Image 1: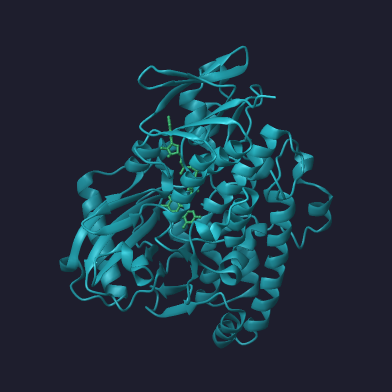
Image 2: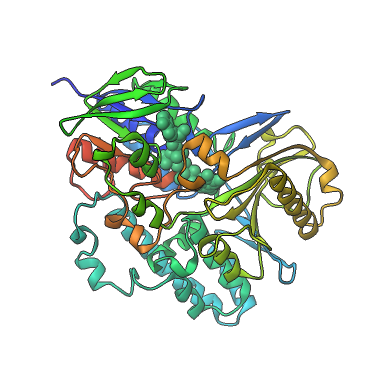
Length: 501
Ligand SMILES: Cc1cc2nc3c(=O)[nH]c(=O)nc-3n(C[C@H](O)[C@H](O)[C@H](O)COP(=O)(O)OP(=O)(O)OC[C@H]3O[C@@H](n4cnc5c(N)ncnc54)[C@H](O)[C@@H]3O)c2cc1C
């Protein structure tokens, strides 16, 4: 039987990944991307000999990437090789200026925890065993599953194992019960920001991120994170996917509750048997669907907890910077106030926490010789307003802080490339609702059955893929979202990772 034709709107990680799965299975796939390159939030830009990964910089859950390539029958190592980062990262506390190195080595981490709080080494080890269990269960039973009813979510296992799979406790409370010191608490809580939430609003089950971070570790693909979208694009093309860039979609065409194709901004109409949107779900719902086909109201979207936006600086700097590692986290003393400024009373952070990635520490191809490549990210509330002048001043303030805490002489004078990127850019580049960097936060009421589903409730040949639907945010998670969209299209009910297509 002839396979159906599919249009995928958007070439982010989820869109690319799904296109390759469907292409391999024989579908006729056309991917339409509004920007001039694919990759979405994981795109790059080059300037004056520097190569900047624009979004993701943490390559975590290598097992999920490998599984995706295995499923296609592809050997991931033929696309890129991975280097494990050692140390994984450095945390610096503004409260006392002290810096601490973290590893994905149980012995080293356990010794460190013990050195900070007597007895904490064993507590840490036991906690990592719990989080390993949570990760394995989540991966094998929850993340690769499509959700259609509350019972798919609150199944017997969750009920019976409430304490081992803590859905209703908060991540913050779990950590604070186990550890007292500032460094240990912050080192085990910051991971929730990768999920777009504050520790106090994150279900305890997401402690599995502690296992992902402190046991599975941080990795770096040769050539940078761009290796991921580039490899997905390569594999998609190999399986016959037609990729069109500079092809913004204006409208999804629906007739008699059937998606028939799309209309581009230039008026061109492209027909297909099925449409999948990888554009943000809020944008798809509010802008690409006619009013009568929308799933959610404006009020629904306005009440969602959005993951933070970001104030990003891309900096090219002369000479090496000895005080910085590949990944660096600088944490404010006013932790609660910091999360409040992002999630409760949106304002520009007064005393910001920030993340600084220096891939040139690992990879000489991302900066000219004797230069460093810095990606600086301050999480901020989505929807914040600013002028270019304000952004420039805020950038100056951030650079001064980096110079101070990492003891970098003349940092400002050594900068040869500088670009900032924030709320307005996320809106212009990705049609991100209120300029959120990541999409919908992973609160309990925005997880699994409560997250926008990956199929329209009335139009069964209109689907969604990417961070806005299940399972959620992050590159590996978007690969999973592609696999579960694939399962839905193929009518596969198996809730675990597929062994074959
Ligand atoms: C600053 C930042 C840091 C991050 N850090 C990490 C990290 O360290 N590790 C990690 O794993 N993840 C990280 N993430 C998250 C990760 O990048 C995303 O979750 C993931 O890349 C999103 O993929 P997606 O499939 O949802 O598609 P997106 O990347 O959201 O892409 C959607 C695509 O749709 C296109 N589109 C939108 N509207 C239209 C239209 N009308 N017509 C055609 N195309 C359209 C957009 O241009 C875009 O290319 C980070 C994200 C950001 C922004």
